[in-house]
Length: 70
Image (cartoon, rainbow, N blue to C red; front, side, top):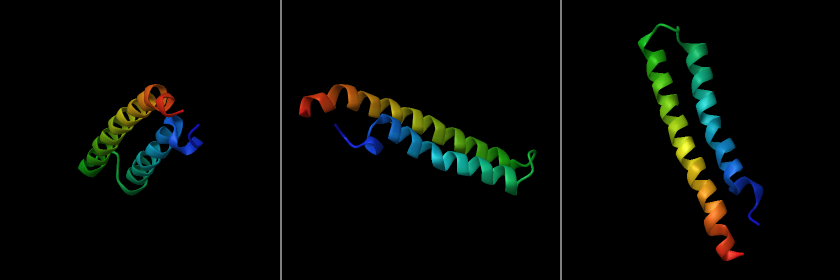
């Protein structure tokens, strides 16, 4: 088996960290109605979509590719 940080759960956990940091920085540094806050929310949405894609790909690799090598 692969080490736990490299399976699909580990990829999801490590990928959501930067997004949480972006949202907390946006809330603490900007007003909710400013244009910068909207830009940061859009950037964090991009990170969330990228995270979902990476998590899906990691799941496919874990289920279909890893058993070939075991």
